[in-house]
Amino acid sequence: MNYAEKVHKLLNENGGILTASLMRENNIPTVYLTRLTREGKLKRVARGVYISREGIYDELFMLQTRFPKIIFSYETALYLLNLTDKIPGNIHLTVNHKYKFNQNLENARIYYVNKEILNLGVIEKRTNAGNIVRLYSAERTLCDFIKNKSEVDPEVYINFLKAYPSYSDKDINELFNIAQKMDIVQQVQEIMELVYE
Image (tube, rainbow, N blue to C red; front, top):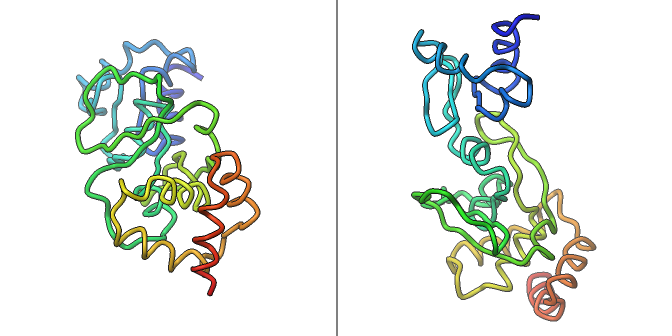
């Protein structure tokens, strides 16, 4: 398989999106990105990120492609989990408290947490464009909302609490497992008792 065929295969596998790092991982010289851009077959949308004419611009996937360590959280996670009708005004994401972004992120609300709890409840889900991204589960999101109640939209919080009991993929054991590791078991228990009354 020549380089052009490899590039075409990667574009098909990644929803029409290519990155410089993906090219390097597949031993394809990144000069092909420049050539394809000059030929009008690719468009540069961010540093090291390119999209084909057939590709769909997927903001969440693009963001996670540029910053692989981010995890979508709070309102963005709820939206991806179909647990809210509200389209978040900002993209909510969580990273390790030591993580440094090499550029300013517009329209992003960034939460910094310790590495001990960073990966609790991480799942994968498809965006509306069909690309897989990493986000927090409903259980981790609920724990984040309870722990940081003063920082979240009260209406979204209340609606989420009302929706959780009928959520088909809920896992109460996992909720309390995450709550224990986040040291908020009592708060979660009190909220769950109110919700299930």
